[in-house]
Amino acid sequence: MKVQIVDPPAYTPPYDRSLCAALARAGAEVELVTSRFAHGPVPAAEGYRVSEFFYRRSAGRPGGGSRRRALKAAEHVRDMMRHRRNGGGDVVHYQWLPLPALDSRLLTPVRPRLLTAHGVLREEAFSSRLARGLRALLERMDAVVTLSEYGARRLREEAAVAAERVRVIPHGALDYLTRLEDEAPLPGELAAVEGPVVLCFGLIRPYKGVDVLLRAFRSITGAELWVVGRPLGLSLDPLRELAARAPGRVRFVPRFVPDRELPAYFRRADLVVLPHRDAEQSGVLYAALAFGKAIVMSDVGGFGEVAAHGAGRLVPPGDPDALAEAIGGLLADPEARGRLAAAAHEAAAGHYSWDSIAERTLALYRELRG
Image 1 (cartoon, helix red, strand yellow):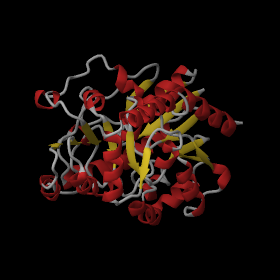
Image 2 (tube, helix red, strand yellow):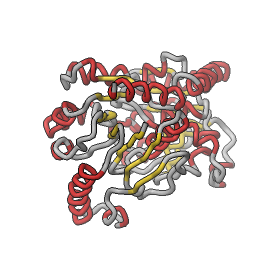
Image 3 (cartoon, one colour):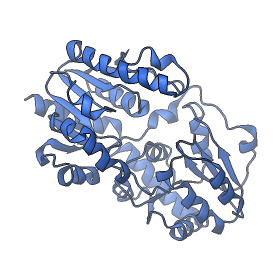
Image 4 (cartoon, one colour):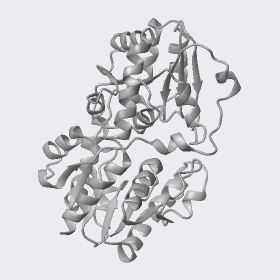
């Protein structure tokens, strides 16, 4: 079976490439159609082909100014039309389509075609994106894959996608990160830290609740908090002010962290925290599973479905007191952390393994083709 996985903006290379590699291991002939990832190296292609088909001019331009955005939008339309004329296989599986109103008119005629609903189900984005054409885009798909039962329910009830066209196939544990040959050590200052470390990793955005975590950390003693990731859409100044009120040290690493540097942060962490106000899923969660980490996370989106495997502790979103209680309790209880870590390892090797996900994905392709 010839499968095209299409992610024009290359928003999620770890997910895309893990899925492609697993489908290839399962016997599919796979091509990833995408663009050059601007922020650093990506996982090497294992058994599949990569075509950096989109944004060949704008992908090489630094920055995010208005001229670059206009060029990228023009290239997007042109490249979608080229893919419509020339692309395809037995199955076309879209991952991200950033201009749904336009993209719904520019899809390949190849059938079946699918869309994985990444990033469209957060509360702040869902209604507005529907208004801009997401509903039309979803209607033109033979199936819509969602990463959680939560996402499936919202697609059925709020986007009116027919139940038989909605399929739940979870995100996989990002275990390739545990096998990197060129893994980098921690910076010397961080490597010298001796006490417990709480890690909050990933792009710093308002909906991710870093401010809630910093308020919670006012009640935590005897541990450091590392906030690692590039700020997007906010200033760090208010967060630094909150951090200054914490009794323990808070360190910011405010930059994009490439794959080769990421493992050292997760290996060192005693606890990984996802204090989101809103989410459906998170790649950081599946990195934490891969490294077998104890996890504290808000009860939002599909996070509870991971916690149901015993692989995390849930707290109400936006509640710094509950978050502080969970973090403090786990830091004081190594056995409880160990149980969560063991459950994370088990979930990563079982329900959230990429080989299991590839089997379910190929079964869906065969059903749609039949």
